Length: 320
Image (cartoon, rainbow, N blue to C red; front, side):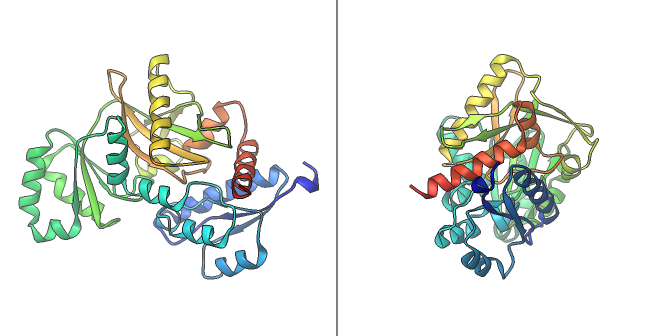
């Protein structure tokens, strides 16, 4: 790439969420890829000096590689929009829709996707109504194995598989450690997959579906970020009908939530080939063990090409 085509890109990574270390790993990978694409890249933490820095430097584009509340709850994205800085990724409003797992699930269910039956509980209600009484109702309403997770956040932090009713209380406490609202949902058994959706201006397209097979049986935080803990299949081993169904479901979820540029939508595909929506990620992990880079590699392209397309699309969008 000639110097005349090089862009000044600020990659945001770090923050103060529980996922800071993952974000730093994602940010370094993005910065390396954009540098390889020929751009002038600055890697920045979203600290107290960030907004004055952006106002003074006026970079061509910002690429957030933030995970957790520091990047995905919409607050920072709203400020970047107010500054008028072109930014890769979804709008603040779309980020808020996806950040809340109950909201996202309700919206995609209305659009026709299968969503696990669930009960959403605030920490305040859990305390005021009495833990034992609440848990009794939950166990009665949702039979079988359950999944308990924070209503926001990622990287499977605070997520517990409950296959013993006596462990439900402890799972609730774990979820409330990460968020004030918890989701208890019926566990769906099947093949866990992730679908990356890319849109560089011509409409959303899916990359090859990535299948996830954790060695320990659960795709936990450790299984996500420690090499050797999970076997990935990119492309997945789903049959043609399964790939088509989950790809269509990912596009529908992406559009329903109003996402743009890049998203990752996670599903469990049951024995009948039906995809069940789990969550959507507006700023998915981009580390060396993350799913989107695996999908990019399986597509026959590379990260520098994809990320270059995303930053140029963000700039074109800002220019009207």
